[in-house]
Image (cartoon, rainbow, N blue to C red; front, side):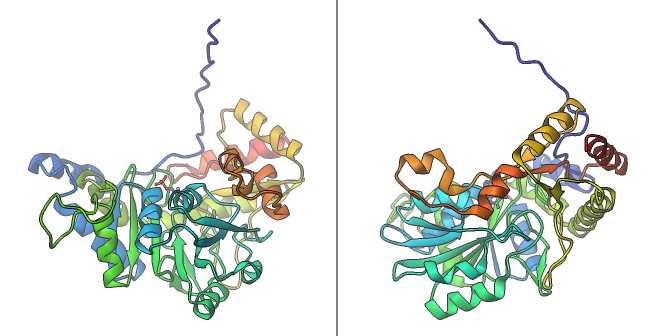
Amino acid sequence: MLRTKKKISLMIPVNTPLLSGNEEKYLRECIKTGWISSEGPFVSKFETEFASYIGMRHGIAVANGSGALDIAIQALDIGVGDEVIMPTFTIVSPAFSVVRAGATPVLIDSDPFTWNIDVHQIEEKITYKTKAIVVVHIYGLPVDMDPVIALCEKYNLFLIEDGAEMHGQDYKGQSIGSFGHLSTFSFYPNKIITTGEGGMILSNDDKLAERCKKLRNLAFEPDKPRFVHYEMGWNYRMTNLQAALGLAQLEKIDEHIRRKREIGLLYMQGLTMLENCRLPIESTSYAANIYWVFGIVAKTETHKENWVANLSKNGIGTRPFFWCMHEQPVFMKMGLFKNETYPVAELLARNGFYIPSGLGLTNENVYAVINALLSLN
Ligand SMILES: *Cc1c(COP(=O)(O)O)cnc(C)c1O
């Protein structure tokens, strides 16, 4: 029997992007000039302007943020026999990149307050095989970078920053994405700026940047005969159409960040009375929350399930938090992370969810979400 899926149209989806600037104008320009592939002029312009916004010398635009990580791992020659330290509580992308390269992810539990990698648990996991640390800045507050940088210097490790959720966020006044040997960004529609699908790698190292540029384009060799290849690469090129969107979005990034923080603060104020949960923390000694998404950690899994189901009944979208890497069926089947447990991350994964946080939200939407949550308390 065919099961018919009842279509509930969400009144307030978990994300709505904001395309309020020159997006249409620049896209028309692509169509009028016929420049729609990765060869178009907006691509290098977007690379230069985004890199300079973050404060890095080189930007390499790619098809998405996961591809940016694939390239970063390969560009650093991470492969069989190498270990890469990363949080267990993250999107799967960095773990996929590392495992595909034949290397092993070494996982770290989360900090219960910022939900980021617990930097104080890293050093005990460093071995002679460790080649890199991937930090993932999660949901709104950046990773505490100073201790990570100190470890990378002490043990001569590469640092990759996944800044996909944190364009324009600072750590002690310096841009996220400007600390790593390589840093990666995504421009998926729920990110702070979007190109529909898209990503970027940033670096201050001329050679690494050249390598990334080559790897995103099937590893064509710039100085050798065309169609003769010396290593494997990817087709992760960004199109001129995507870069056109990106440039228009970048013109508005400060406004986007201001609005994210405004939505975050409205939720913080509106939800102070919400019981049986923990709200995000507004700031740490090194950064103010950018509220890329507004996460809530319920006291129990049941509380979370009730909230999510009831919000959904009210037409309000939610998303669960990430599921830990050490509990991913795909990795368990491979025999990875056997008998490993990370209690803080497991609790976040089970009890955490986030409420509508897109830039397209109106204040009325935010109040409606707050009222729905409070009335279900
Ligand atoms: C969104 C995201 C990615 C993946 O980006 P895509 O463009 O969707 O491939 C990678 N890392 C983090 C932390 C993300 O939030």
